[in-house]
Amino acid sequence: MFSWVLWYGINLGSEGTQQVDQIVERYPKTVTLKGGLEAILRPLEASDEKAFHDFFLRVPETERVLFKHRVTEPSVIRDWCQRIDYGKILPLLAIADARIVADASLHQQLGGWKRHIGRISIVVHPEYRGRGLARALVRELIDIARDAGLEKLEAEFMGEQQSARRVFAEVGFSDLLVLPDYVKDMQAISHDYVLMGRHITTDEEYAGMG
Image (cartoon, rainbow, N blue to C red; front, top):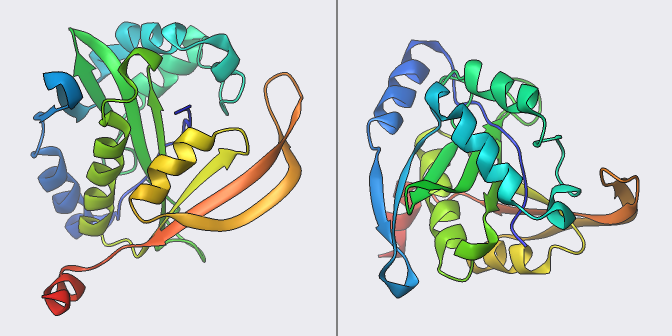
């Protein structure tokens, strides 16, 4: 189950703005998934509002109740699409078969104790799971986070999201915290809260591994 809806911010200031511009210029990018399916990765745009809403409507209700936001409400999606600021938020979409099939994001606190820590979230449509798309998106966001100067990454889950946690574990995340019956879904049902995390390896550390 791949269903985590969050947003992120990258370093601000003139250097940060240049950094964001350079990151956005990488896209669109095409990735080839299992079975030969090609998906185009690119940032969310204001013109995606209807397609973005349609994407969330196609996600099963049994999964949407675990989301943090009421994504079936047009006003929620409209607010996200009309308030895009790549200097603070950079949602990354996957497009296949002429429609949005996944949404990935990385978000960061712009100040305070956790300003060096990013948080990743992903939603993949059920029909496109098992093809390596979630893994490709997580790796893409790890690269973006590294280039944005972050040092650590986190991802939040409800206890039932076992398959999602496995994907993150495969790319270096491990459990940092598990709290029984700590969070509630949209139907006010309690679930375990799981926080996973990983360090970001810098280019210098990569060089040292050689």
